[in-house]
Length: 508
Image (tube, rainbow, N blue to C red; front, side, top):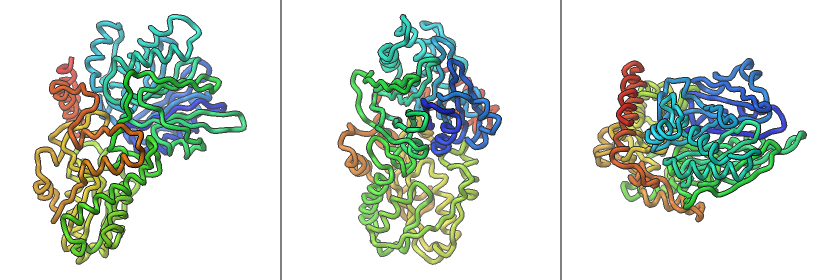
């Protein structure tokens, strides 16, 4: 999961990109990067850290030009500690291409070998984004035999990318001297939308991961980029669009609506906030079928993503809703924090219990999901220490039993508390008096009801179905080896680098 943005403007793009990345900060806190283009010259700055820390005044001054793109990184492939793997990525031929990417390529290692042996292109990092930009560059070189470069040549290149690349990818690229390109994988797994803004100098076009980045920077959301579709915006702001995939289907990632996206965003025609309210409705039914509501004194959300679901659940079961935890907004989201030991420590730094809301009460804690279980275990203990008589836990998402290979940090089975465990065993692990999970089918039904045009969802972490159809047992082992190596690196960088190297050697 990352956040990406691109803009074709009539005024300097650096501040606009910075503001958009701040609005997408929730999608990645590991690194940030911006590239701008003035004529055919690219100016880039990227580094590890939050947006506000990566970009200082001197950095912004070094990013001139009315065209640009940016990214906030949350690493699920490659080396989490490498600044070289921060985005954007650049290749100088053909034309000069700069690219940002949100997603995860499931055939990255096969492509890496193919690029070296057939296309004669060298990959210098473990990042699948570097693989992707080189595939695009090669396909563009084949498609653009004659100049000037036309939108149809660009679309032929994207069609070539779709034929070769597997996995999830939402992409924004700049082609030096020609314009901005954006495209989405044929399943539409990761989100991408575009809109327009009007300035005294003229119209401008922005493409971003979420609608909130458009609206927060004064742009009007036009629509989502369709699965398999490519957009090309020339330097005059003229927009061209074409479907480049053979059999596109709209199967967005269901976890975006559960947790990843901001509640004020609209993804593929679905309000994230309304989706979470609907999840609260169905979760209320599960709670009522598990225990009498009279046994619950108060419903308390675990900030932030679970609030809409918790409010709707409390309303439906007729029990009081209270804020029982105060969140320190200056500590990163624990789902994204590297390393289990760091996650456990950060929970206490991040949340503090309001004792009067717990003391002597039976409390129902509502979370958006339970992934590794370490956060839930700490929070249940915090509720008991605050004086709760009984602590029940409800998850607005079903049990996360399977790894995710499409760009969410759930790479190995061993890390998932629900993998190989019954609900009762998970309850014992987190220390709750009762545990209620969302139902998978009900979850899909109530979110899909908000947009009948959907063909389904990418919900592999819940149902084990990998919609791209290319994740074999061998590839799964490779992806899990990489995930374990990254986890080791986060806890012990020196040991982890050796593990990453070994995982990479096993993939070739």
